[in-house]
Amino acid sequence: MRRSFPIAVLVSGEGSNLQVLIDTLHGNEVEIVGVGANRPEARGLERARAAGIETAVFPKADYADRAQRDAALADWIESLGVKLVVLAGFMELLTPGFIARFPNAIVNVHPALLPAFAGMNAIEQALEAGVKVAGVTVHFVDEGVDSGPIILQRAFELSYPRDIAVVKQQVHEIEHELLPRAVSLIARGKVSLDPSDPRWVVIDE
Ligand code: GRF
Image (cartoon, rainbow, N blue to C red; front, side):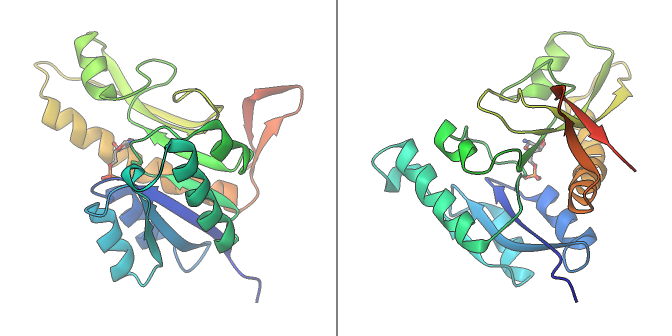
């Protein structure tokens, strides 16, 4: 039998997106062969261990600088032989050296409709801007901040008065559908970049 599509997932915290990947794709379309974190207390690591997935922690403080940390992280990911790296709540920027080692093979889930509200605290940024529509983006990772080609997006209307806890919950529910869907499409070879305009991601379902 053909080995299913091997991926690594990087987390920093709760890992609810990782959990959905474990529950929906792991062991069938996709095999999560490693979960890495930048913090040993990331709850996502426990979720990975509970699913029998190899884990590793790469705190910045253990290395001379970010480039060396990212090189160690990339070495570990490469040793796993993965075809895709999924950032599922990995809350640190990765250096260009890391990105270059996995060309068009890193995806991120972001809690806003990019290119609006890139960076940290995207939901708070959107509410402060008074938007009427919020949403989620899954995109390829390039060297910029949340700036790579967009794979999938979904929007929803905000109700008034706004309650940030409710909005966060709505965003998470969408993330939990969109991220596995994007990973599944990639694993099934349905996602490509338009050669005439590599900003444009083509989904061939
Ligand atoms: C998600 O909202 C994601 O968009 C952001 O970090 C959060 C991670 O949540 N980048 P979890 O750790 O998967 O629960």
